[in-house]
Every structure is written in structure tokens, then in C-alpha cells.
Amino acid sequence: MKVAVLGSGGREHALVWKLSQSPRIKDLFCVPGNPGIAQLAKCVPLSLDDHQSLILWAKKEEISLTVVGPEDPLSNGIVDSFQAAGLKIYGPNQKAAQLESSKTFAKQIMQLHGVPTAKSASFTELGSALRYVEENGAPIVIKADGLAAGKGVTVASSIREAEVALRASLEKNRFGEAGSTVLIEEFLDGEEMTLLSFVSGPDYLTMVPSQDHKPVFDGDLGPNTGGMGAYSPVPHLEKWLPEIEETIIDPMVKGLQQEGIDFQGILYTGLMITKDGPKVVEFNVRFGDPEAQVILPRLQNDLLEILEASTAGGLSSIKLTWKQEACVCVIAASGGYPGEYKTGFPISGLKSGANDMVFHAGTKIVGTNLVTNGGRVLNVSSLGESLTQARTRAYERLQNIHFEKMHYRTDIASKAI
Ligand code: AMP
Ligand code: GLY
Image (cartoon, rainbow, N blue to C red):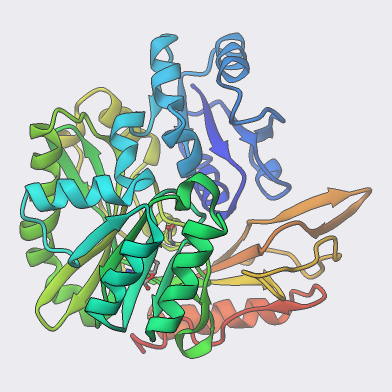
């Protein structure tokens, strides 16, 4: 088979790495890919916005299955375009992708089907949004309705901070169209966990849980990023899994069916485990980044078989099996991220060992040098017999890696250890 992955970050490197182990794949491609991915797949420099060129290319190469990594192409209807052209593609269609591309839409589905989540209201107008914040007080959460690369959420500890976030979104257009509607949400206190599920219409398989670390600094301080590290399993929160499946995943999958939404792809459930039990913080419609970098190394099944079974409606015949080993991923980021940062710094010390993978997130080749090319630069994922061992290995691996102004959190997985 010829298989293509769309995307260019650490998650896509992990997807390509996992698919490269499938015995049935003859040729693996990635559009556009990155220098790390290029060691495992042929990278094709096409734009993910240009559906017609992608379709022409996939037809010419006779790609049997295309796998979509990031949310933007899904929300732009890449799945609908490929299917209309008679091509097989893994991921939700544009209608289903609204679960991620509109937080208001996701809230409506949750409310209709009794899925526990934070109380919220949507606004397009600054005056009424400010009044709502005054009435409800702080802490309170302000969210851009649309896609904002994980940076559209402000957890405001004061009314003043909430006002600044509202003005940035509604008055100064900080997130463009994505922030022209904001959701103001009740603050949920507790610990976060991510649960990914393979969903194919009425069938679903939940994966092992993981935990992301969104704030940029140790101790969960500083602004939110796309994710600074992750680990799996999450032993101290796993007792909640049966309740999460029963009160959240099951009603969501059934609810989507009832709403006439044919969901085929990954349902990413971001949870807060509160004192009143698990509640949904957000849904996404693709693998998490960096959650994929700790889940895929633990998956024992051939990923291709799961994806094929999903697109053919045969997901219920699959049983997922997992390595007992734990996995910890630490992100090496550019100093300054998620604010302004410089790129183009040479990277040294890259080499994967037996127990770790170094996934590329923001790198490029200039001349013969590998240099930094993004906020999140590298993802070091290590396996170990315990979380402690996996974490020790990841941090040892990082000691050898260097680029100017490199920043990473030193407390990934601490909550579980
Ligand atoms: P989201 O993009 O919706 O996942 O939000 C990004 C991050 O903001 C989450 O991972 C949480 O850490 C935090 N967050 C979002 N919504 C809430 C909430 N209602 N209460 C507390 N923290 C939240
Ligand atoms: N790690 C958060 C996300 O993928 O949205």
C-alpha cells in the first residue's frame, strides 16, 4: 500500500514513525513533512490549503489511504474534498470537525446530550461580554470560539485580566475571525487528563489516557502553549475511566449519531477531573500534540489496520493492545514561545537511542545544517518500565541536545510521580 500523512509537526512525525512499522505499507509519504519525517517517508512540498493539487497528487501516486494530522485541514473540509474525488482518507468531515472548530457548537452538542462540562455563554459583543464577567466574577475562562493553535484560552484570575482577554479578542481581533465570537466559561478546578478514542460512526475504541502540560513554565505557570510535554499512563486518575466512558464518551458518540453527524476519526476529549467528577474542557477531532507522542509508542497494534477498519466500518472487530511500559515526552521549545521567539539556530546532539524517539516539531535544513524553525522544536519521547524511568531517560536524552535559547519544562510527569 501507499499511505500519506498530512502535516508537519511532532504529532505527524509520531504518526509516520508508527505507520513505518506497518508491514503492509510499501511507500510512505508526508505532505509537507519535516527533516525528521524525511528519514522515514518521502516528503512532498504541497500546501494543505490547496485541496485540488493534493487530490491530483494523491491520484497520480495512487495513494490508498491519506491520514490527516492537524485540525486546520479537517476544519477546511479536506476529508469532504478527498471523498468527493473518490479517495480514501482518515479523519472527520467538515461538519463533524466543528466539534473542534467551534467551541459554541461543541457546547450545544454536549448540552443536548447531557455531557458534563463547564457552564458557559457565547458573545460577539464586548459590552454584554463584560457585563457577564462582572456578574459572574473571577476566576473565569475566556475562549476564542474558533481555532487558535491552543493559544485562544485565557484562564483569568481577575475581572481585569478577563477584560484584557475579551478586548484582545473582540476589539483588537487578536485571533482574527476565530476570536470574533468568544465563549465565557465557568472555571473548573481539578486535574486535567486527555482521553483519545478511535471513532467510526456508532463504534469507538478508547485509548490509554495521557496528560498534557499546557502552561510554558514549571509548576503550570505562564501562558498556555500547544503543549510542553505529556505522559502515559496517568495512574492517579485512571479510576475515573469507567465513569468517563459512561457519562461522556458513550453519550457523545451516540449524540453525534442522533444529530446526523457521521464522525470518523479521532475524538480527543480534554477532561478536568473536578471534585464533582470528570467534566469536558474541550473536544478536538485529531490526535493530541504532544499526546500522540506518548500514546503511539505504547500502541502494540498495527495502526494501519485500525485506520483501515475505521474507514471500512469494521472498527468493532479490533481489540487494542498496549505496552505495559510508560512513556514520557518532553518538548524542547524556542526561548520566548508562545510569545515572540527567534528561529534559525543550529541544533546539535540528535540521535535516537533504543528507548527514546526524538520527534521533530519545528526544524528545517538550511544548507547542510538542521536549524530551529518553530516554537516547539523537538519532542523527546522515552519509554521505561515506570514513569520515573521513562522520565529519567527523556531528561538524560535532552542533556545532549543543544540549540541557542532552548527551553523545556523540568517537571513533566511530576503530578504522577
Ligand atoms: P482548551 O483549548 O479549551 O483546552 O483550553 C486550554 C487550557 O485552558 C486547558 O487545557 C485548561 O488548562 C485551561 N482551561 C480551559 N477551560 C477551562 C476551564 N473551564 N476551567 C479551568 N481551566 C480551563
Ligand atoms: N495537546 C493539546 C492539543 O493537541 O490540542
